[in-house]
Amino acid sequence: MNITKQQSLKKYNTFGIEAFATEFCEVNSPNELAEVLKENQNKKLFILGGGSNMLLTQNIDALVLHINNKGIEVVKEDDNYVWVKGNAGEVWHEFVMHCIQNNYGGIENLSLIPGNVGATPIQNIGAYGVEIKDTFVSCDAMNIQTQEITTFDKEACQFGYRESVFKGELKNQYVILSVVFKLSKNNHKLNTSYGAIDTELEKMGIENPTIQDVSKAVIAIRESKLPNPKELGNSGSFFKNPIVPIEIYEKAKANYPEMPHYPVSETQVKVPAGWLIEQAGFKGKRFGDAGIHTKQALVLVNYGKATGSEIWAVAQNVQNTVKEKFGIEIEAEVNVI
Picture 1 (cartoon, one colour):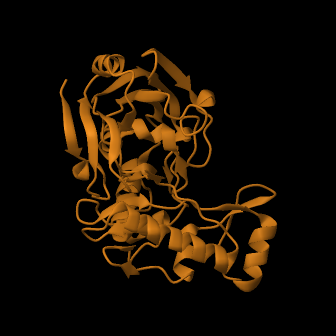
Picture 2 (cartoon, helix red, strand yellow):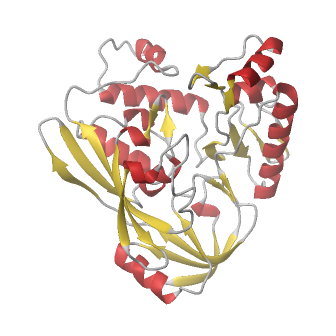
């Protein structure tokens, strides 16, 4: 277990931001994690997974622990379902592909989302009408102070829209080690009505889709709209879709009758943040090396040498303009550090 000094984090964040960690350690097992936590109890820590959901606006003056434990296993199964455990360091998309190749259904709509398995319950990641909480069973997490391992079930995780207990009252208290999902083995319930999945399947000439077909459709849609972080630095969707009271939506809709929305409850609706940003004139705009993607207004990009602060300044400009124009606040989905 090697601790390095002044480690560049450029290859460890999908925005490709050049920032440095005062100290850095790659952790490949729970035992290694327990050891490094025990030996460095008085140090400030920063837990790093796939680096796909953060914007570094400064150097990290801490011991950065890069969680890199690998492994996928079936922990239980019956005639209809399989319980699959993915360790936190597994790349999420590779985990999804492993499940699809074995005909395990339920997470095909979450294909090609960047990041690692360990981050999925923290953020309750979601796309195309599906969220992690739909198939989540439990996760094992290590207490940073005591090194004890606790299993959190779905209820304990307190999942909300891009929210969980790990972003709330237990923030910075646990490191997720592994996650268990309950997936279908047959009679898969496909979710194709959200977004352009049905249209994409039609384009592919598929009338009776399999989970493999749905995954291919999702990948095609994502690749057509979202830049590959290896080619253009980004963190996927930068903003959450705002959930607003119906009266605020109605007030905005009076001026913008074409504003789309999705009912959330009797009193609230969700408005697509991408639509708001595009209508505010930001889609495809560039400010030096920081900008908004040409194909998807939700995605902020680094064209090469943008700093995290420059990208954050663009994000704040977008937030302020949307608020002024529509009276609706949009929040960052990405963790700004």
